[in-house]
Length: 294
Image (cartoon, rainbow, N blue to C red; front, side, top):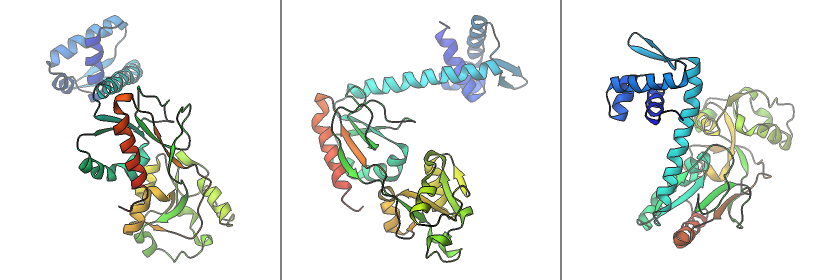
């Protein structure tokens, strides 16, 4: 195994592209960082940095190694956080996607905190499908559709229907939209996370002549949401996640056509015994919030 101090120095210096910044982060001198990285390079038998005047640049080997080392440190940090949370019965470990957490859960959390100040909520939103749900990792999980390998039956939070939305500013600056055939294909906002949504909706709206492959494309669903909010175009989004935006008039739902074959949003309670009461209390609060306007 390579020297741990060298790995830590390399990860910090590679992430910051500065020996000085890495030294400040780790509480040592730049000379110590340089020494530790040289020891690591000698151990590996390859250069990780090109040392240039007043700056350092990762070599191709260093760049590839930084990805692996950085991911390893992140995994250690995540697992350490889980162990800390597991030792505190007042901390609930909650899984929720970034999309759900940003649009629906986090804006409502102050209500829960005000009513239950002794219960802390630790939200994890790893990229990818929901992980296996068991008490060692999560007390509660909110998923779009059934979770893989779930042992417990979930509670239904709300449906996952998709509706076309845009901002008032977009409507003000474009011809009226009273029928789906008036949609401009170049103003359709797409998320690469959900390919095919517009094609399915246009088929349902009986306007197949509109080219669903055109428009504005983003990798992330939340970037598409921000684009719609900023007036760039029209996007399909989960109606229940943006209910507050619709009520406040920040977004406007267009037409009376929705994709309703999407899975429901579900809540799984998988608490460790010492957190069962708090977990069920939080689950019931979620279900009540889903029925209560903000």
